[in-house]
Length: 231
Image (cartoon, rainbow, N blue to C red):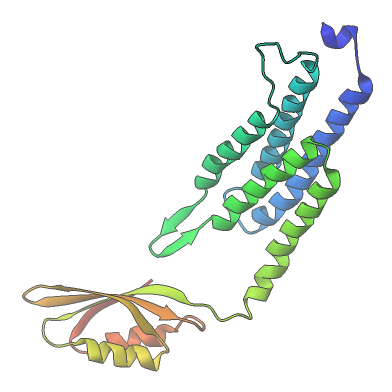
């Protein structure tokens, strides 16, 4: 009944506008993730931003509501405690979108986007509108522009090559010779022997484009090789 008895429409309208702005900014960041088919897309980012904004507003409201308490009161107010829990909670949500597939780790950018989306929502909830909009623009620039810029930089990538061959017929030097012709280097090396077969598990490093099927064919054409897998 307190809300209906003593309405503060200006304050309530400000809160609603904050929530709408948070939804807009979070949705803009989420659209980019949605377009690229990531598990956390438009709806997830929008909900994270709005939720963080609402919890920040509630934290601020508690502080304003009980601001009359003096230092002699047993109640201690700390408006930053709710914000701290938002940061902790978003960490668990971000961990859920990180996937490890062999040597590749996916979802780190999406997890970072969720973390930034929570920060944007908190900034809007505190009334830091210019900062929230500016961070949103930075996030969009990093997602759209920096990704294209990364294509001009040569960076190391790693793939796993597994070769099955007859025991005693294929040595490491022969393997390195074929890999060298395709611009690959061995970063890690594992070997498994049996009486009739030897299996090489190689982690190879490449800096240019992925090698074509010629690499697989080069090993498959060897009489002593029974199976090749490149992933």
